Image (cartoon, rainbow, N blue to C red; front, side, top):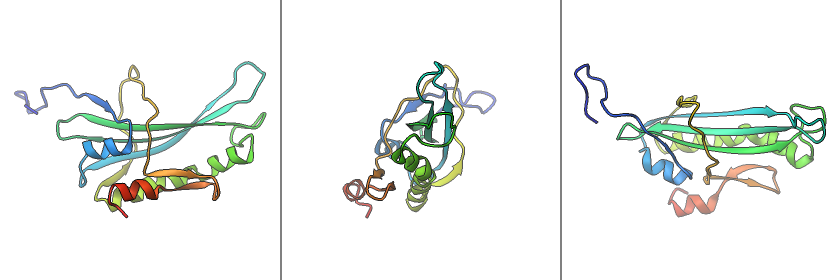
Length: 161
């Protein structure tokens, strides 16, 4: 990236939305600093009929060698019990709510084990830019244990396990 007379980057920074965890780690090399954050947002039904939702989001971002911000986000909507803001409408929905912090921790542990410096937060982008629902295929939802686990098949394909 070239610099202007003030030593600042002269190119515009682009935002690249990675569709998968694999494509993210191809863009951002081990040893890089990345930002990871999980959050949720309450979405009322708005009609007075039906149930409200909570959208759980996990975001990962970093800066590639070209100076572009690379982002990966995934969104998991959970239907809530009537009149509740934090209680799932079914046992499975509640299991997702309870297990959500574990997904963030699995991704953090994986990245740190692969040599990334993981910091809390996410790179700020313009409100005009929207994110799309990508895939953190390094982890998967396990219906039997009702928690997030490493996806052993993906890890084996990537020669990680």
